[in-house]
Image (tube, rainbow, N blue to C red):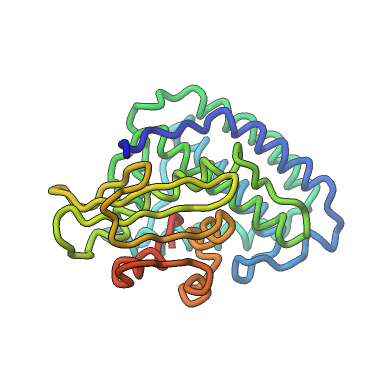
Length: 279
């Protein structure tokens, strides 16, 4: 095994944006109205949400615009999720007045600017916001940039699923998503008590997959790459199941039928609730 290393995704933003624009330009009017796995959101709503997050990042990060005011102080993770959900709902409701053509024109303008902004940042410098789903109050830019990459990738995949388009599931696209999602596991397991040295190995099968291990040490659960010889629980799942699970695209009961847990079942339980989105 070896310690997990930073995952750099800046170079993927512009190609991912270009794939999105190619996809959207080929949609029919009916496609834009199709429902998605995101509750109450159509394809057009997801596209609008993607534009929203890009505008927010550029406005706050590049242009130093102030954050929208919340109704009260945000003192908990659930409070932060509620605040973000409110912002998301406000934007999506308002942008239902915008045509698909205009949404595409806005994205064509903003997407390359976002890629350039991320490329201008010091990967090891402190990000404006910590990656909360990984339990971090302060994160390095590479992790926050990677978090945004996972968001744009999985939202595009949700659109592709809704309209029947081929997914971007080759290793170059999906492996960074899965490797970043795995960073949620130490936080997911934070309350699970076990003897020191307890190890859990997770294997994601397929071209984009890999193997990681959680090991309980003096500072809590730590994520490493590779197989722990002493693992008392082995978890195995496909890349398709993994990204859906981490983005709330599967209920735990659905996931239970798709995820193999061998060994101590109590150590496999938290994995089925893992999330790498703000929810």
